Length: 358
Ligand code: PMP
Image (cartoon, rainbow, N blue to C red; front, side, top):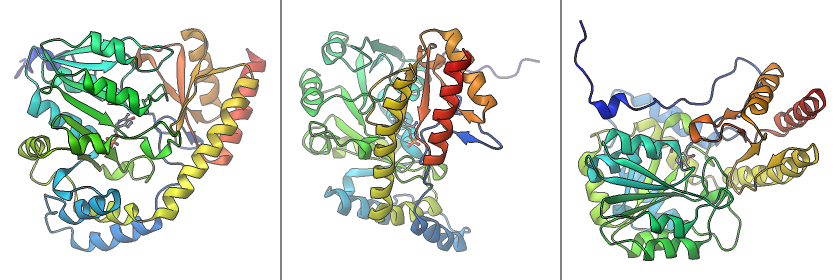
């Protein structure tokens, strides 16, 4: 018995593998917030959990109003999803058919390739310069078949970003019927003056969508809530293809509370950026090659796949799990999420021991 056969493009997909869990020690493999989440979010979630018999508001009205007020954007031009991952998939459902092309920078976020494969579309990857998106290389690869361009800014797993002027240049080189998705999953961490998450472009153009998430700075990855802001035509398309109740009531309530907990957000940014500034030079001093990052993780180049694997095994033996980068075509690299101060101290000790032992 063979049973029903999935489509061939579905069988070609390698299922997404998340960062491995640990019973004890430090899990630094999924870019989660080491400070947890806002107490106010937990409080709101607990309250909302009193009425689990009720369906959620499918349109996430109250949360969209709150996001609109916070970012000074029109709440009717926002749509929520079960993580920004779901929003990417809904975009694939609304805009892609077999034979279309999805364009990304070489080391783009893995879910973009899943979106393309699920639709039977072709993923086109533009080479990068020093692990940074190269706008010229992106534009050179636009064809008649290009339908969606994904740009994570900052990008995961490289940690790099491109200035707003470059984002605008990318947009200016695209036809109006090509959807440009500006994925700002790590936007809150970036302090550079020439950075912008592109909300203004999403307001002004019919083909630009900005996505954001509660998974990173708000520490609510477990609740699965992301959102997108853009022109009515795109928001309308996403509403047509989303599930009627795609975001849970408890997630909506908790995220609304988290959104307004400015103190928690500020503390998370401050912790991340000071630890990033501490860890990067300290790892470099130990002889490791570390790429510049404006996000909540560091990409480390071990020079070879073998040494990256040895480091992985060594770190695990010390109770530290970081992410291998084979799926991103960077088998010689590993990605380390910024942890608590205590975790990062242990990381530095373990890297020191590893460099001495090997
Ligand atoms: N975009 C980027 C660049 C990411 O790294 C991630 C999470 N790893 C996401 C989007 C997805 O975030 P979520 O689905 O949790 O909102």
